[in-house]
Amino acid sequence: MKYQLTIVTLALLAAGCNSSDSGGSSDQSSPTYSVSGRVTALAASGSETVCADLNGNFTCDSGEPSVPANNGLFTITSSQKSILNAPLIVQLDASASNLSRYSKASKSGEKTNAFFVSPGQQKATGNEINAITTLVAGQVASGKSIDEAVQLVKKQLLALGLPATDNLLNEGSNNEYATLENNILSIIGAMDKSAADYSLAILSGSLEDYKDILLNTAPTEEALKGLVDELNQSADAVALNDTGVTTFLSDGGVSSISQVDYPGQDADFGSDAKDKGFKFVKLDANGQPLATEVAEWPCVKDERTGLIWESKLNDASSAQHFDRLFAYQVSGKFEPYIEDIKLAGCEATGDNICTTEQYVNYLNEMKVCGISTWRLPTFNEFYGLINFGETQKDDDDEVYGLTHAYFPLQSKASYLETGSVWTSTPSFTEYSDTAMSGSEMRSLVQTRGSNRGTVSMIEIYSDQVENDNYDSYQMPLRLVAKGITQ
Image (cartoon, rainbow, N blue to C red; front, side, top):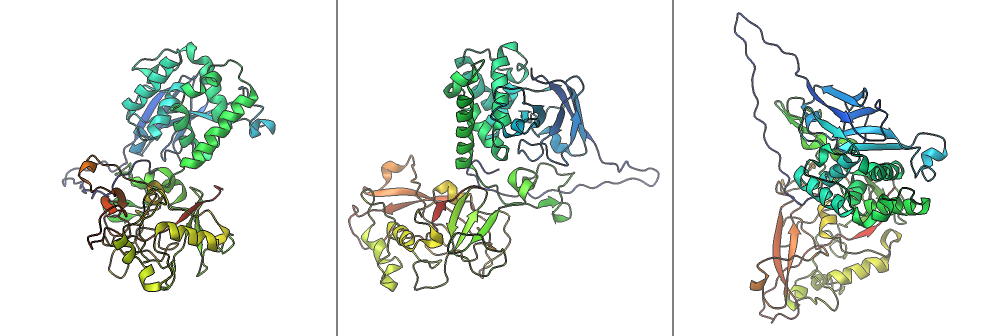
């Protein structure tokens, strides 16, 4: 999953070789790896299934190594070395918990689907799984290191009046955690599992905010329902795409199969492992789904994030042309520099759609795909659209940054010629004291070529900068609207 803004690179793997002399033979069998520990959750019966969560989605998926615990003890064995780094999941029944009346599963008489998780610690032995390790794992899922996650959860537990030390990952069986554990189990049993890692990241980072519920021995159904709904809605809002890398490097080159000898590659984890890359749907003029093979479509829906993106046109006279340039504008806050307006695409067409704000208004008036809430994407939203696994190239032999099958018209206009577009997110820099008065710093992301994902910074001028016949920057656009996550 893509949580931090970093440049994604693929390392070349050095191939080793096996040899044997004429008088002997070598063992060609695959090595095996094991990870063991104990389920120390107070609510566990001791015989629950434990799995190594290889793709990091907080679910025991089919094919992931698993084993039933014996009096809480478990040892998972696999030929995949990545089990040492994987989160460990124990599947639990939460039907007897406080939230059972709210859970859809319990209403139908089924067991409530709940789990606890321990973060991957590269420990072959001594792993524990309980409510406290689950909170730590939630913070690890948000991008923190094990040590950072432990310290954050420890600080919050102490603020709640509960015991906590630096050895937090081995303290979860403390009876003083009984109420907290019961309520966390209830919440997990009812939350949307499709975004469980995001929901737990939010919950584990906000324990003090939910103190009155988490430490209540009998919280009301209304309070628990409100908390779960809030987590689900927040998870929808922060859902992110993965990198799009679905292939593996091997001794023989690129492979579509996970490599036992080289575990832990990008394609082994997150949404790329689960869904094989991005999940896009073409939309018609009314915002309804189209067949994948249609030749024209005005919009694309990202089913994972719920965002809808405009498609571009190959018509130089249209404001929606893929290489059309615009000056940046936010009315009342940042009015564009006159030289940037002169060089925008409106100069040639005469349509007076010269700025980012004018283009947003234009698309909303047109109600493209039936939508009147088009806007500039945030930096993170557009960064999340970059497909680092795309292999299709343009006429200049540069690989496309967005998934070509759904975004065939991708700009390379502007000075950078890298596919960058305007976003709504400003940039702040320690060097801002050297910036020209009346200017603003903006972050741009390169979306074409082998360096796609590279972030650069530019200084753009407003109308408050004295005209000296030099322009600053004009950029293309690709607007976005919030859809509904399916």
